[in-house]
Image (cartoon, rainbow, N blue to C red; front, side):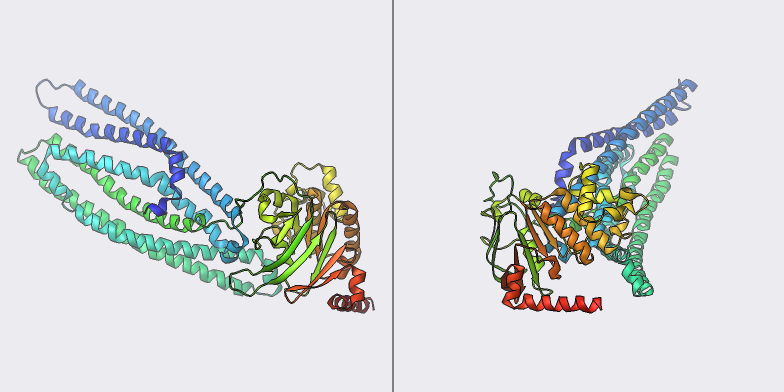
Length: 583
């Protein structure tokens, strides 16, 4: 149990003073509530006795009214404290959840579905908030009110109290049995919710593909099945709740019937007064509320702990990509000299290696081009350079510093990559371009757009740079998305710029214009270009050709053509394709 709450305890401790104050106010309300039946008892028993006058009734009513007003005020404050604190804890957990996700490596995201992460951030977070915000405090309320009311019941009549609590052991059995079932069923509900969220998110993201292949009915069937599974698991949980709560009500009903019968008889026989009987019944009502609330709290507890278990699987995930102990914090900036030395790499231990003995060097201000057949590992080289994945020790150096000695923030600030799959946020064009430099001026944004050959396209939109691009840039063409991503990268002007097949969707003329501007702009900065089209690479200072897990050719464009290897074959093939297109 300690392990389940391990990640939640810091948030509770941080707000412990507010929770304690809410509990204290709640206890005050409970004790004020306990006083009222005693006042009613004395008032009823006083009626008809010598010296009892109408003003005594008015005084009793005034006292009860005053107590009720104070209770209302205090209730307001403890609820504000409690609910406000619960939402603060909820916000802090959500923030830390997202911050933690940002520290996790690509390996983690490769093995978990987006729908699961969304379910953790919604349903599971809500269940934890309810547990922390209400579960613990109401638990204290149950204990205080149950004990206090029980004491006053015993004072009135111990035998009647014994009869009242006689059915209660059955309540304990019901709570234990059904509590376990609720915990298990709620876990299943959350799993099916994750699956449903994932499918809906995936279907919406790929709506163009779904429509292009006329798969609307198939997708609808898949989502309908997941929705049916979700409903089915919820119905199973509802069935358990449907037995659980009425069972509690049945036991409470039995207790009240026994008190009604035997308490009424004791009153008629004069063993207890009418005032005591009414007060006893009121205390029994106070005692019954905790019994009813136990069911609700158990439900909250089981749901909350089930969700905490699920969230713990994320929070307990150890980040792989972190600063090493050997990190040199004196490194504040990178120049851009890159050296790969005898790199061997595989994604998993004991799996087939992606590379064998990869070695090359790029000097500051040079442009390196990488080409090779599909799946030869071109993008993996870049992922290792930016530590998306951790490379083996002593294989990658920047400015003669081993990559693990460079602070991760400095490394990431110095490298900007334009990936194969362009991601644009559902924002304006300006909001997407200035992502890496939020304070950029309008002139800087326009200049970057011109260099990326997208300025005229943007002016063609009705709202220009204020045009909303839609989810993932759905309103733009593939070429426009790539050029906006290039403008975004050029605006930050990084020391090391990487284009990972980032020109594949633009025509050759636009490609040439972009590359000409890149060469001019980045004379003193390092650039790496990965591409399938040789036209994107031929002006590079150095070109490496990957094949069969290693570098098989290295040199300039003219040197590789003269060498007559794979590069020459790819060049001839592409030239022939261009010639055939022209015809």
